Image (tube, rainbow, N blue to C red):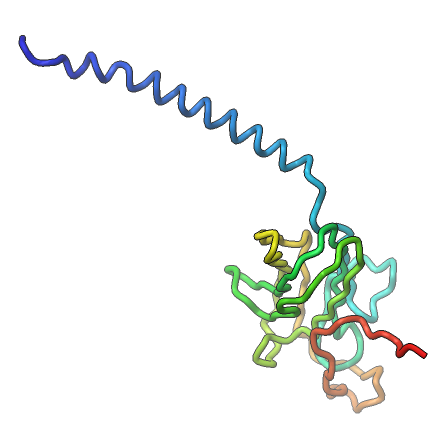
Length: 185
């Protein structure tokens, strides 16, 4: 036959493909090892329901029903690099539930604390479920998910510790905020 032998050319395709896959696998392994050695951008993450005991095993569970018991979730973390970031509460399917901070500057090696009142951006309380905290570091071009989950339960209000009639509680006045500071003087 005068034409080229197609099966002869194809027999080199398999070894070349395997070689490329091997090289890419070794490269990916090396990159992952390098990333593991880099210092964390965010560490010392804590979630504490305001009104929960320090040794309470369910510190990540809260119920924003206005009875002043576990109505707020305090989210604490430390950044190891300075950057401007957005901090969001994320629900099922990566849906944005609440933006706690937008274009906020987080200085490195500082403890930061944000408070979530259990409400969506539209003011409604979401359905019972587990939520995550997403931090978008703009200058570093990184999206980080804080470890652990916040669990929100829509329990009815019980006898209020706020002094309001049973089942009503006082209205929640807190929104996402920075820790309060004392005036200098």
